Length: 310
Ligand SMILES: Nc1ncnc2c1ncn2[C@@H]1O[C@H](COP(=O)(O)OP(=O)(O)OP(=O)(O)O)[C@@H](O)[C@H]1O
Image (cartoon, rainbow, N blue to C red; front, side, top):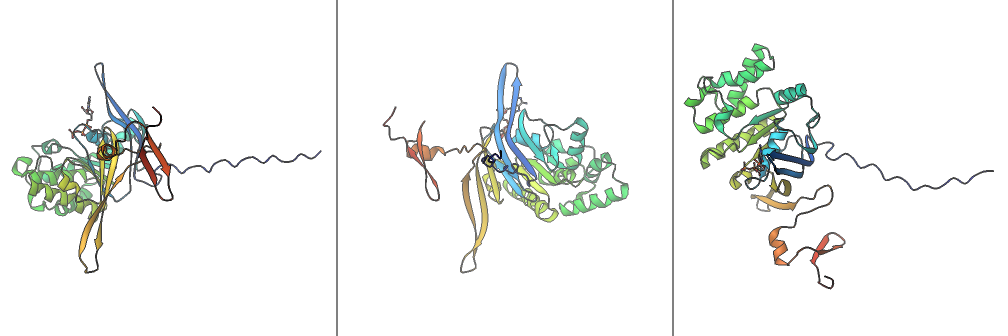
């Protein structure tokens, strides 16, 4: 006897992998530090995507997890849980040998303290040569690359000086050149302008933008300085170990041909749909523990709990 085929519901189409085309992917990233019996959750489920060629500023209060994020992306620290991928490298499952390769070729890292990036007894040219020698780059290529970088970073005339003979801004530019020696796809900079005065900060930041635009290197820069973060197209704010909001800036030209920068702030929604409502919004409408959500034609409304139930 012929049986009627069962009509089964269609399985839902498989969701594309989160950030499949991004260069940097952090998904629900967690980093817990254990010091004695105390546990510090430096990252508490952070999501972040960075596309190839972007320049992103990461801002946040002291202790919010910015340096932890950068150390993980630099391959110096390892996450406790979650997912972190840069280019083709999975930062959670990388072997020790892969980690060395990753740090040598995929990312360049500029540390917070200017001096920590430099070797006191080497000249600028010798310092740029060092990572290339470690990568077994032939001498002829090393010489050409060092000259190119010294030039691109505006320190060609300082090539034979040691760190003590350079100003803070010049030291930082040399540090950036050293970080770029092995042609990484990503440059990570942790508070590169933290020790510099305002004018020198602006100069160093301009250098990072040039590196991003002219050399096509993806740049992630941690900063405290709102004036600095105001110069990039995308600023990601971290609060309590999570990305909380983003500011996107674009240049618009009005009818008179004048250009101006338009900055729009967005809240970040995580993979589970959680959004942080800013404190001033919550206070203005006394939004507390329980709120009403309503799906409207083109937005979702959040209203205070009317208080019929307790
Ligand atoms: N090695 C460590 N051991 C224990 N706790 C740590 C360690 N490193 C960072 N933390 C803690 O993790 C949290 C996040 O620190 P992190 O340095 O990432 O913050 P940050 O946003 O970079 O701060 P800052 O702007 O002051 O550099 C802080 O509470 C910090 O005290």
